[in-house]
Each structure stands twice: as C-alpha cells, then as structure tokens.
Amino acid sequence: MEAIKSTDSEIFGLIRREEQRQCDKIRLIASENYVSAAVLQATGTILTNKYSEGYAGKRYYEGQQIIDQIECLAIERARALFGAEHVNVQPYSGSPANMAVYLAFLNPGDTILGMALPHGGHLTHGAKVSISGKYFQAESYELNRETGLIDYDAIREKALSCRPKMVIAGHSAYPRHIDFARFRAIADECGALLMIDMAHFAGLVAGGVHPSPIPFADVVTTTTHKSLRGPRGAMILCKEQFGEAIDKAVFPGLQGGPHNHTTAAMAVAFKEADSEEFRNYARQVVENGRTLAETLHSNGFDLITGGTDNHLLLVDLTSKNIGGKPAAKALDQAGIVVNYNAIPFDPRKPGNPSGIRLGTAAVTSRGFGEREMTQVGEWINAVVSDPENQSLLADIAENVADYCRDYPPPGINV
Ligand code: DSN
Image (tube, rainbow, N blue to C red; front, side, top):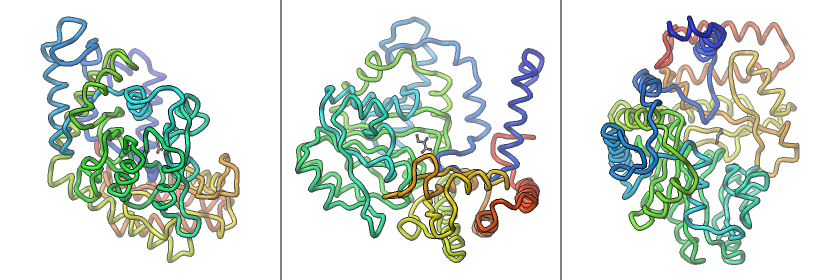
C-alpha cells in the first residue's frame, strides 16, 4: 500500500484502521466474510481500467482479447461449480441482479410473491420501500407464527389467490433449509416463474452442505461475497432458454460496462470454492452454527425455529429484556459485531427490533471451530446479561482482541 500511503495518507490510515478492526473483532454479520489474498489481489488489478460493454465476442469497444478470456473463465467455473446451464457474471451486486431478473420477465404492475422483509425476505423481494415494491404488485408470505418455519401450504394458498407472475424464494434471515421442490410445485400450479435468491447460502451450496436450488428454479441469483467468499458482486444462473433474456436485461437493460476486476476475482473465488478445502470450510460453517446455537440455547436464549441448518441464527431477545439495537451496540463495544434484526411478527419497530442476527461464515474463514464458537456464545451471554456494564464490555473487548490474534483472517496481514 506504499502508493496509497504517499498519495493519500488519510485514506491509507483509515484502511489500516479498518484492517485492524477486522482482525481484532469477532465478525458475526451473517452476510460478511473474509476473501482470500488471491481474491483480494485480483480485485485490485489494472482490470479496473477497461470498459467492456457487451459479452465475449460481441463488445462495443475494442481491446477485449484478454477480458473475454477472463469473463469466459468466470462463467465456465460458475457453471461447473453450481451445475448451471447459463451464467451471467456481470451484475454489480445482489440488488441489481434481482432487478435484472425482473426486467427480463416482468412488466410494471405485474404481481410478484416473495417472503416479507420482517420475516427474513430481502428488500428486493417486494418490500414497499424498494423499487421492487413500487413498480410491481408485491404480495408477500409470512412465516408460521408458532414454528417460525416457512408455511408452504399458506404460500400455495396465497399464490393461487394472487396468481403471481413470479414466485421468489430465498432470504436474508432464515436459519433453515428451503424446500425448493415445494416452491417449484407452487410456481407450476399457479403458472409462475420461480426465482430463487441464494445469496446467503451460495457458499454452502457450492460446498455441498446445502440443497441446491439450481434444478428447481427458472432463475437463481446470488451475490458472490457472502458464504461463497468471493469479491463484492453478483451473478445470475438460469436455464439455457432464459439466457438471452437475462443477458439483455443485465446489459443493455440495466447496466453499462462490467467491473472486470470483480469478474477476475470471482473467477479466482470459484476456483477456490471447487476444492476439498472449501468443502471442509462449508461443513465447518454449518457445524459452527450448530455449536453457537447450542451454547446460546443452554444459556436461555430463544432462537427462531429453535436452531439452524445453515450459517445463520436469528435470536429473539424478548426473554432477555433487551432490544436488538442496544444488544448489538453493547456487543460491538465488546468486540463482537452483529446486526439487530426483526423477528417474525415482531411487536417492536424495525429501528430497535426484538432480535439479532448472527452468522458463522466469516469467523469460520479465520479458523474458528466448535471450541471457539462455544467461547463466542459465552461472551454473547455475558454481554447481553449485563449490557451497561462498561468495564465488563471493555474487558471482553480486550479478551476478544487477544483471542483473535491466534486466528489471523485470510487476506489481511497486520
Ligand atoms: N445486506 C445483506 C444482508 O446483510 O443480508 C443482504 O443484501
């Protein structure tokens, strides 16, 4: 970073501090991860200098001899990794990927049916504040009030009554597997397309520890930077018959030139994900989720659905007499970074909901196993039990930073 240091000492200093923060804190934000040094290096290359509107063999600027090869490699690796017929690696991130799918298949005013945001869905699945809820007739399904699980019969009933043009499965905060075959059957019965957003669990699918949505969906979208451990970006995977519509929607429908440095970093990440090492990582992510769930449960925490099948836990703090926001703030002070999150049928406002969301993808990348997750669960319990005790929070933060020193994250060398 010598050049950044001499050109812009302010930004250099801030990057260094962020590196230190990422090393010293326990990152339990379910959508975050640490990329490898190789992915990081690819992201910071001269590929950022090139414009490449179009697709390999059909670009609108010359000089694509190398870029075409990079994009084709990324596509081929993604196709092999996920067993997909057609892949587009150009979406800038998850929200544009979802918008491109809507642009490909829907007209303004068409009906879509997705999981409600406060029940674990994503903004772009039809939330009223999002363009997906403003331009489309967005209907939503909720979780079962008693179990916190997806209620497939209720979704079927809703789909048959609102007749969506597209059914959307996938989530940002649902700790269990999804029955993709049930969603396929519901979409077929009401004549809808099925889009599955696997952003959160794509790495677990690649690692073979989560059912794959590919055989069931017409279109699958995913970011590449969550459990998949790639750069910030996204891709769309679909049946061959939809490939042309998807490509046209991404470019020229929604975006301009692809971010070639990101495409290269994706290719590197897909290569890394196609390995025994990554499959072991994915297994450990899920094991770590279970261990954290057990530790919290034994300390009296209520978990939505009672536990987890994936990398994600949704904790209801109602019985602990604390809101999600003050709990998240106290945990951050203690060196444990989480986000506050609504729980299904949350009686509290979104600005200070009843829950926190935890994820194990990032800590597993730095080598945490069951022993470490038990320790993390005990620290969370100590903080949530006494969140205003400043000296306790400071002590835990110091212990956390010491502890983290033995688990250097990939890609960071401080
Ligand atoms: N912001 C992501 C998450 O935290 O789940 C979703 O886009």
